[in-house]
Image (cartoon, rainbow, N blue to C red):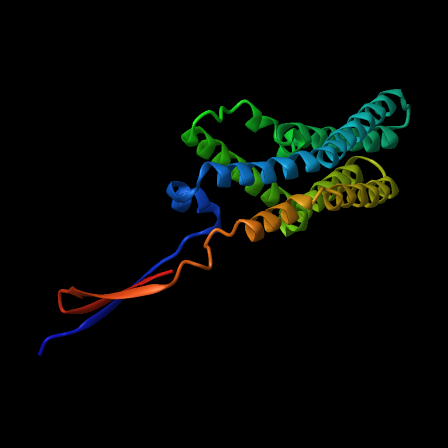
Length: 231
């Protein structure tokens, strides 16, 4: 008795692959409209991203310098430990910002050097613009990431533990509470408009046009039939 198998293959198109699946169908005018939309949104979000990036960088730099100065100036051993730990934490936060800046700080500037003389060049620039839009939105979502919040809290707990071990308990409590409060303000104040920009783009330029119907077909395979569904 023959065994029969039923195989269903489902083909999906993900939102991030708009050009990969539609490049051949996009006209010059359609690409221009998409580029204009993305670049306008990227430039509109640039001032807020710069205020956040440079504002917090300046704050952490100033605090690191002040705490370092106080650690050197103080004649009290407990105070030296507390100031030194706070200086290290601020320097670490500054380094994190400098090594991993918000991509939204550059606005649409990374795209401006890309040529748009031919249709293929326009498609390449649009792909880069879409990637930048997705990257900005992904970074904006990090403000709600538990891992990022827990990392910040862990750093301050480690710092306060060092103060307890080498200095004063009250200084440790003060440093811990203040540090966690500042770190949470830093994370939650990160600009989030990139998420709205991506949503607006996907709504105005849907990846999977509604006009494309779903279809299915039967095919013969060894031992039975196969069903392929196209979305």
